[in-house]
Image (cartoon, rainbow, N blue to C red):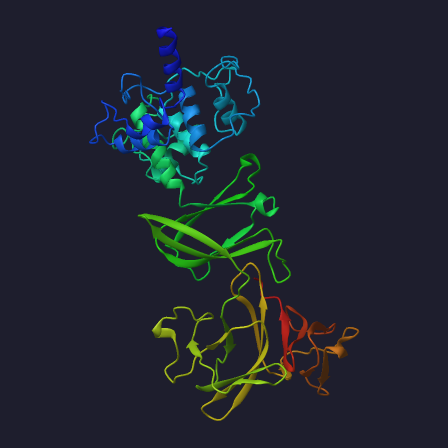
Length: 492
């Protein structure tokens, strides 16, 4: 009877269970002093009844841990259902094996594999490399991609097998090598080392937010953005559960520091994308009990977006008035910025404006979706109207902005160096624009009517590389922008 009790107790310990819950709360293993680097992990996991010691009051931290024991412990850590399992068919793991349920549950989730010859080797010591792969898969860690040149270990250089997972847990500071340039992937891992690695993995995983395409009813992610967010706030790691097809169906957001920002992702995008095809979030990262905690708040907000108005060649801008498309005045003096770049963000001072105070572009902020009329007043008294249209462009937080200068008529003088002969208009352009040509000249005049474009053909022209004349009209509300130019093959 005494021998049977000892065997039963040893089996419980091998499966990662303490002698009792109360023992776990009070036991101090005689061979795990608090000064050991793995002591904190050992005692915490023992208190949670994840691991246990031996009947003689020891933990034996230097003993190797088997593949079966690792399966039993980790399945408890990640709370796998080990009751309803499918037989994995390993010929050395019978249903009466003490590790069977844990091994079967882990195999079903594709966390562990056998050796390829039908065996699992439940009593074989687990290696450092095998433990790395099990931890990455069991805790669903971000699948970072690495170049072989990035490996700090001279024994982790193949780029396949366990190598990627070794580099992942190293990058996440879950473990280090056995020396500055070796990992010793084939060395067995000890009970003390295993406890420390498991606890470190839990802590590394805790702040990470994982998004899965299937949770949104999608097959994959096609885009992501963090516009306007400090790039040091969080890291985005794309991954795929269907590696052979290269489908990106998982996104990991790894917080790096405290702060707020934004994140958006989509399976489709554009102004017509509905809520089924994208997600937008406000991101908040805070330190709680010494650890970063990230939360996502879904939103449909679009943020203030700068609208560009090209004023190149004009005098210095005095002020800008803004109204709705139907003429309702919003402001007679809208704040604006100047820049010789197309987008104003962080415009360097040396190219903000020209020496005379003029600039290539000015920008005003648009806060809401819709159409607007901006009246730009210059210091010489001239006024020019611009049509501005702001549309949602999901999943972007910024509006899609279109702005046009009011140019109701346009003229093209093709000169007298070449004979262009007669011109031929396509059918129906009179709805888009009225085209006239002064008799016996190469001068065209256009009056815009509605949005559209067409080409005037010149079948008898003698001008090299000339295809014809392009005419176009852009329209936002009552603002019409008309243009006309030669269609010439530049050879580019």
